[in-house]
Image 1 (cartoon, rainbow, N blue to C red):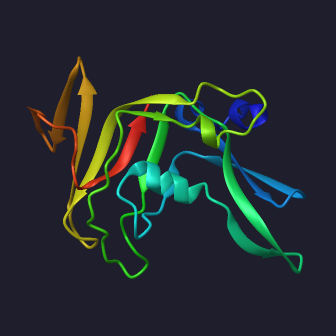
Image 2: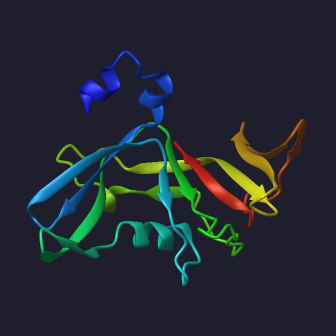
Length: 174
């Protein structure tokens, strides 16, 4: 992991947001991957970001070397900035418009398996939103700044009375 971060082509952005995940098949095989954001699906019964994370980190039954076993996805390292992306679009291009609740603070400790466990606690600092459909649509952001939430929409900024938005799909935690 240190070699990945120390590479000459690795930018400051990578150093701040890269995290490492580990996928384990049974007790035999571990695979490590670098992630810039955690892409999570929205299960049919999910109402919160915690539901989506629970689904992402749940065991999955797979075939491995002609045996049936379980694969689990976990975090090995975290980063200064932790980005979670909701997969709002299905393969056919239709959008999942259901509102997903997201917390002000998130604790990822239950999903971290490395020996040197970082704190795993993060506070929400920004939310990226997408309104309308796959083929078009509009992006805007909600940012936490100087003790207030601000909506940034193209060249306009306004004080945001609530930081909950049904169009939220990207969450930046620090």
